[in-house]
Image (cartoon, rainbow, N blue to C red; front, side):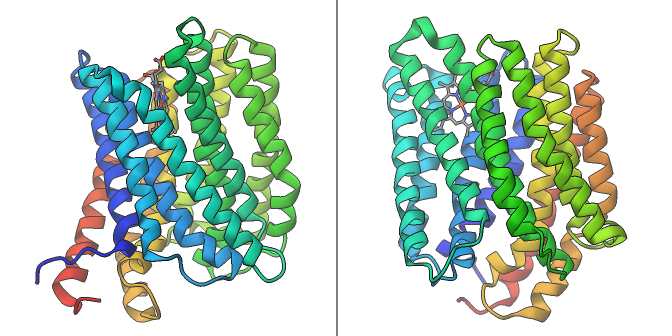
Length: 386
Ligand code: HEM
């Protein structure tokens, strides 16, 4: 049967695109050094991760606000974000000036439209929405600020350096980082089938610290090393507490085989590694060039791998299909512990500038891609079209 793509497939497609972008960024960056590296990084962060996060938030927001599923038309927003990302990649490769000016504001349009939708869901929610929604709002504000920075840098070239530093830090640690920290605290209890009663209070308490840390890092990265270092500590403190709380709450169950938790745990460790590496390179030890590989291999890849393991079956077959979804999860979680260790090790090696770390990252991304394609093949060859 030929595959019939539906709007509810979009998070899955965009996660696959993130895996492809990761291979391009890691392998392409190492093998073809004359390629524009910024284009390769945007293949994973802007073409893959940015629209994927919009699509994932589209899935989670109704759950967090206890409102009906998102309308199908909302799938247009990740597509507009994807268009903006493709526009900026085309500029990096071909130098089409109009795209350099247009892409940041198109991405901003998608972000604001999405914020408007979240705001409406927030208001229609009976009672308070889950505290994770505030993390999404903060993450989207970071994305908007980061896009404004590169939008402005095109018309204020004298400030291009600091604006670029602001853009890259606020997008990685703010947009992707805050989305991840919020989502992990909703996802882990679901993966393990055990509620975490401390999560809502922790989410509410930690958000101001994580936002303040992100802002201090992003502003400090443009020249104020002490501010950036202070920001990294402020950001790392609640994250470290989250790691400890998580281990206390779930204990050895986190490390059980054939489920997503080891990968999600590795992602938390990887984000700590990113902060540690940032502190060291700010102090003149370590190389700033290694920061993006560390972020991608040690943090983003285990995060997306873990989230996909848990959510791909629901994205492929929404609704109550418990037995099918469980069996797909079991397959997707093959070697989850080994993959978690290898990705974290890859991140550590990348932090020391060892190229073998990139090989581990490429293998992790390829594994994810093949596992996703296998699950999709089974869905499309067996299911009647929904
Ligand atoms: C439509 C969306 C985006 C646009 C239009 C955009 C635009 C840009 C531009 C113009 C630069 C280069 C600035 C310069 O060199 O002066 C840049 C750099 C960068 N951006 Fe983006 N960006 C987007 C999304 C993202 C996202 C979502 C992330 C990460 C989460 C990201 C991470 C980075 C990084 C890491 C760099 C520095 C890359 C390097 O040093 O090679 N960008 N971006």
